Length: 341
Image (cartoon, rainbow, N blue to C red; front, side, top):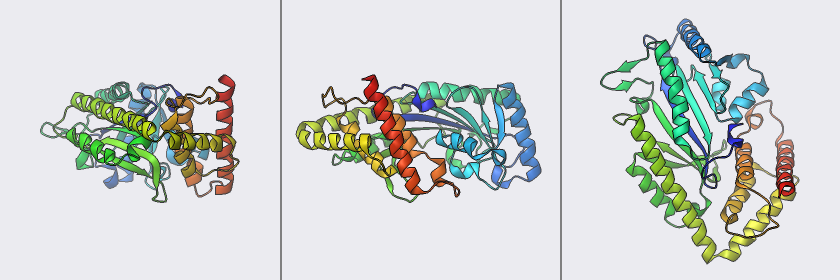
């Protein structure tokens, strides 16, 4: 999967996501489309996507393994794959690049990269958007820009977001508010990630653009680079300061977390994220040749813990089985790191 590839600043940034929304001129937005219009629009997008090398897949025709693969790679929400209105997906050969059809917009181009790589993510999505614009007439206003079903995305139709893990900032009084104010200067926001049950995921946040009207795509990419650089710098500083002041606590929690992850036979997702947060706090600061774990492994475990289609599916496995399988997967990852070390 795309998130298994090496990335920049992965000690803080798990992934970069760029979404470009486009709609076909002459058609209502998906929420107001007739079945006939929906099929016609999908046919146009399917043909254009085929010319670019994309494979067309109707969500209603996907089996569970196919849905699991698309969901677990962060392309879409669970509801998109199991929607009553007909939806579809375009999947290409490039890792982390796909197109949602018939969701809120006629097409949502999604580009994902490991770590902080907004330039590459944007270029990949923009290339697809440009090719679609050559194949069909896109809904556009000289005054407003690209037209979308949600007024927040009118203009560029571009949204940029980063998935970040900020245990240092979260444990430092006032640091989260400071980062929030810095983000606001660029018309960005930071919000905690919530689980399906409404509980917060330990240390996990999304940093996302909120301005599209009156801002060019190049300005948005530049702002994205500045926002994420601030977040990485502040998080690293907080981790370092906490370790200097409370090294014994950090080391104790680090080693406890390492042992639990390496040897547990049953573990819940929320606990995994909490323990990985302590690993992030200590890794790189604690010098111990016996500890063999790298950032790539930590990030892959974080992604696979957060995204699990089978746990959301009505026909998914029982939680006890999931907890056991999760522990098995983590032990195997730690074992491979130890063997490489």
